[in-house]
Length: 138
Image (tube, rainbow, N blue to C red; front, side, top):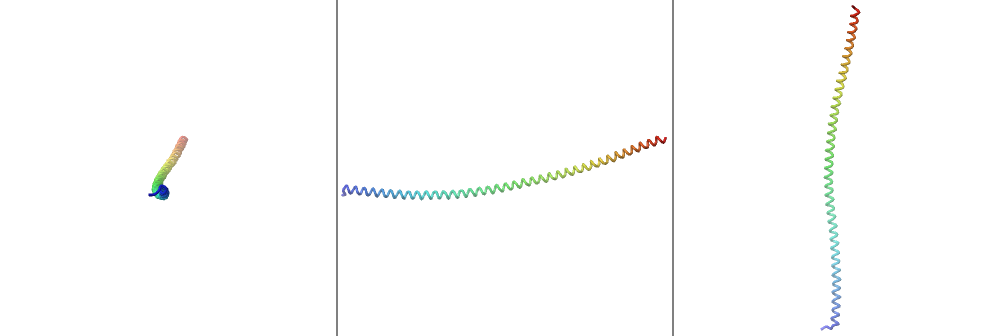
């Protein structure tokens, strides 16, 4: 049977051995934990990149759709404006033509009135002259 001193020595050796195993186990666990953490961070970074890429693609697609809608709406607005401009030009031309027609008619009526007035004045003078001649002749 072992003596107490040798039991004490075995106990110390075994405690040292346990301490070394604990230290090595803790180091292995720490390295494993560190590696897994780094892997997790790297995977998270990859997922973030993929997600960001996916979001960027969605945003670009939505932006392209929005730009297409904008250009379609702008084209429709320009077409309506052009149509209204053409209609306005047609109305203005029609009104201008109507004005010119009425102006010519008015000028014709004024000219005709002046002619009739001149004829009336000529006839009145002629009648007046004839009456004077007729009175002198008697």
